[in-house]
Image 1: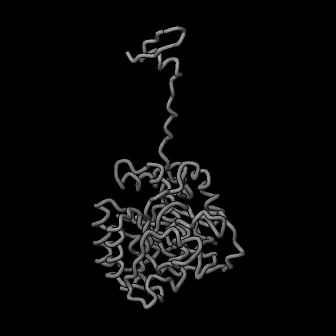
Image 2 (image 1 turned 135 degrees about the vertical axis):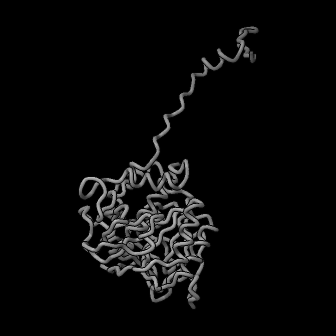
Image 3 (image 1 turned 180 degrees about the horizontal axis):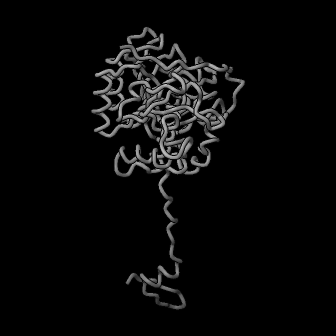
Length: 329
C-alpha cells in the first residue's frame, strides 16, 4: 500500500533575492505575530516525516536538530521533490532577515525522509521514521502524507507512540469537498486531521471532508522554503498540517503541556474558532486553529517589597556614631 504526498499545487516559485523576511498571510490571519510576544517555540523539537529537506537552505540550515533517510535514496536526506522542505519551512523557517519566518521560528526540526525522490513511500519506512523521531525526542510529529488505505505498520506505530506521549498531525487529503472520507493516517482516531482554508478563512475546495476532520488551518497559496535556496507558494492540506504542528510548538514553548499530550490535543479542539455550522462539521472539524487562545494564562508579575520594608522585617537597625547598622534578627 503506497503512501504519497496528497496532490498539492505549486502556485509560484521565487528566487532567494525576491523574498525578504516575509510573514505569510496565514500567520497574520491566525494572530501568530502576537503569540510571538510570549513564545516562538524555543527549543521544542518537531518532527517532519516527508520527502526530506534541503539541508543547505538559508532559512533551514540552522534549524535542523537531526535528519535521517529511511528510503535508501542516493541523495540521502536531501529533498528532491520540494515538498518536505516547504513543510519544514512552514514550521520553523528562521527569523534571520531573509526569506520567510516560520510559525515557530525557534523550534528545532527532526527530519525523517520517509518518502522517496518520487514522493511516494511504504508503511515500513514511515513506521521506522515514526519510531526514530520518538527516539530523538519529538512529541509533535507532522505527516503531510496519505493513502486511501490503512497501513498496519503505521497504525501500530502511531498507537504505540500516542500512548507514550506523542501527538501526530496529519493531512486530511486533497480529494475535494463532498468526499466522505479522509486519508490515512489522518483517519485514525489517535491523530489530529487537518483541513485547509484559503485567505478568506473558507475551507478550500480541494480539502477532503469526513467525520475524522479535527481542525482547519491555512493551506492555500502558502509561501515557504523551496529547493535549492528559494521560496514557493504551494496549496494543499499538506501545508495546513505543518502550520498546526508549528502552533503546537508555540503552545508547548509557552508551557501549555502541563498534564500530558492528550491535554494539548483537546486544547486544539476546545479553542478552535468555529468556521462552518455551529460546533463540529466535516469540513472545518472543530474550526480554525486559534494560537492565541491556546496559550496558558500569563503569570502576574511578582511584587517586590520596598527595601525599607524588607529591612524592617528582617533586621535590627542600630546606630553607632551616626552610622546606621543593620543586624539580622
